[in-house]
Amino acid sequence: MVNVGIVGLGFIGMIHYLAYQKTRGAKVRAICEKDPKRLAGDWRSIRGNFGPKGQKTDLTGVAQYPEVDELLADPRIDLVDVCLPNEWHADVTTRALRAGKHVLCEKPIATKTADAERMVRTARDCGKMLMIAHVLPFFPEYQFAYKAVTGGQYGGLKGGFFKRIISDPLWLPDYYNPDTTGGPMLDLHVHDAHFIRVLCGMPERVQTIGSLRGEVAERFASQFDYGPGGPMVTATSGVIDQQGRPFTHAFEIYLEKATLQFDVGVPLTVYDEKGKSKQPKLGSADPVDAFVPELNETVRAVRTGEPSTLLAGELARDALVLCRKQTQSLKQRKAVKV
Ligand SMILES: NC(=O)c1ccc[n+]([C@@H]2O[C@H](COP(=O)([O-])OP(=O)(O)OC[C@H]3O[C@@H](n4cnc5c(N)ncnc54)[C@H](O)[C@@H]3O)[C@@H](O)[C@H]2O)c1
Image 1: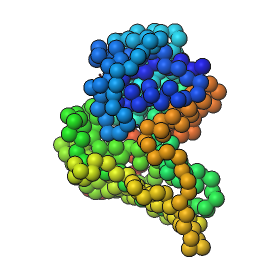
Image 2: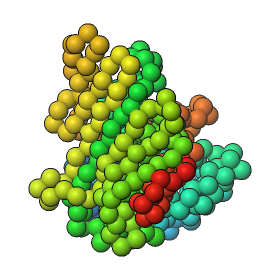
Image 3: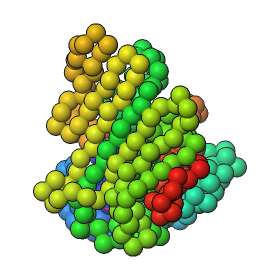
């Protein structure tokens, strides 16, 4: 059994808590939260953009710590699940690793590349696992695409287009703060940057056009240059939609023998070289359900000692590097070497 301590019981901490109830071989033994009501199990004030409403939750048998250090000192905890706001990821993750715990930390790994490097280095030095909770590859459509590209049954990858667009998240006052949340590039597009890194590796250069809000990229379109013969990859993301349409994501993936198309409300479709198309039967479309396979994979890695291919800290570090290079390109209005 992997004993888990969740740090930060807000929106995603609650989603993880609920998903752990369906995860094989894991038990939440402790939570840490600075809000006394949430710490005591009253989650009615929690707000997010998907999933169930927060309820009063019976935390009998779950230790409740107001301070992170108390949870890190709990000898029963094997895995610390960091569900804190982005600016806390590096500090709490490195402390947890030094306390001898494995860590699953929410995306983005950090807001600064140096912090991400330090997190990866600390995990290596401490001999503990650092996994970053990039859940997107566990969504059924993205999982299908991941397997189609890496499995090779449709031939090589020729190109891809990725979209992730939201309306202004007015309930998040810190969203455009470069030092805390990091804006839409680091908080939103990082999902696609990670998926592009997983499917295609690191490009040679990136070129991004778009607009800033203060110091952060607000809306943007990027080209990922993999050099002659490499895949042709583009992505569009940011805050540009109306309040009536709070979230959309989509992709088109071009392989030698198939094209994959997915958009919100349009089931994933595979178009083949013979002129036919099919819509494979996929798992649940409820985003909450994607967290169960993500946590199953986390727990599997901790139990077996066999690192996770999709959740590796190094991949999340690379995704952050891509996002920062894209912002640099947008600001300098020229292509930037990666
Ligand atoms: N994977 C996804 O789809 C997804 C979705 C939303 C958020 N996230 C990520 O999850 C993380 C948390 O986001 P959220 O939306 O849950 O935020 P949130 O504000 O809803 O929750 C954060 C919680 O942490 C608590 N907290 C803050 N500092 C603390 C401290 N020092 N000690 C103890 N508790 C503290 C807050 O009181 C709050 O309850 C972010 O990194 C975000 O990027 C991921």
